[in-house]
Each structure stands twice: as structure tokens, then as C-alpha cells.
Amino acid sequence: MVIFGLIGFLFFGAIGYFAYTFTQCLCVFSRLDKLVNKKIVGVLSVFIYFYYVYINQDAVIKAFMKPINDLLAIS
Image (tube, rainbow, N blue to C red):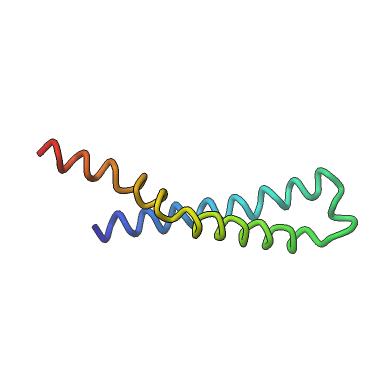
């Protein structure tokens, strides 16, 4: 179970980093970086990502545990 926790945490961090860099790219592409620093927009997007994961944590845990429970049911 510890390895699944580490994989989940790594995935969580990777998606957070993707949200950070992708919104910075969108900020530069839309020329929003002329008004607001792109790093502020990146950090804001990471906070929004954390918020969505937090409010949907039951669904996230259920989706993460479904393959494990299915494997245990087969055995």
C-alpha cells in the first residue's frame, strides 16, 4: 500500500507541475503576462488544482482504489 501512496503522490505532484507550467504558457500566449506576472498566474492555477482535488477527494480516492479492489476480488 505504501508504494501506491508514493505513486499517487508522484502523480499528484506531476499534475500540479503541469498545471503550473501550462497556465504560464497560456498566460504568455494570450499576452496576459503584460498585465500580470506569469508566475503569479501559475501559482494561482496550482492553488485552484489543490482546491479541486481537496473538494473531490472522495471521488479521487474511490477512483484510485477501484483497480486495487478489483484485483483483490479476483484473487
